[in-house]
Length: 149
Image (cartoon, rainbow, N blue to C red; front, side, top):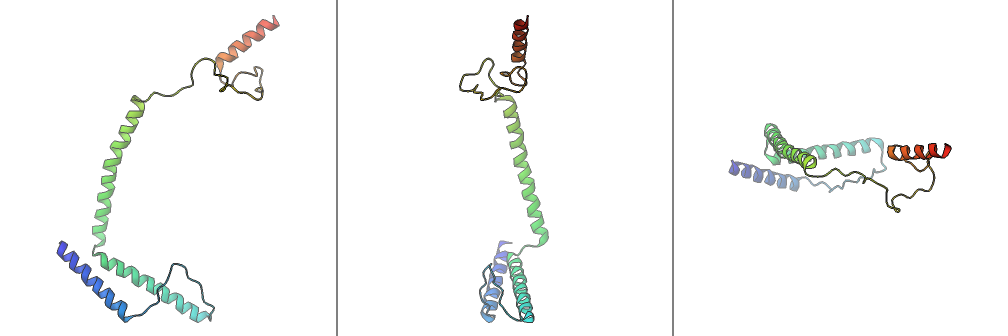
């Protein structure tokens, strides 16, 4: 099998060399600048460029020596390998995150001064309490009730 593949590659390369020697085409880069020429000449040049691209793609396909079915089988093989590797990795990382790593929460109690910087009061009745800090709201309302009584 490997010998047949190597033989087909060498014959394809030899055919490419002989075809390159017989037809002289200018090397093109990926940037083309349109020439100022009559419309028919520009169309002919564009068609020649497209034919050259198609010819190059056919040379590449012929040089690979694989059929479409073989390439499709190879693609599905690597898809299966990817899922066989990725699924356990994802499952193990979720298990690790759920069991081994502690979930970080805000520490209880008052915050240190450098973390409790407030440049402006909150726009509700207890200006120093965060919106969902229920303990602070309870203390604030008790203080307001004690002051008004």
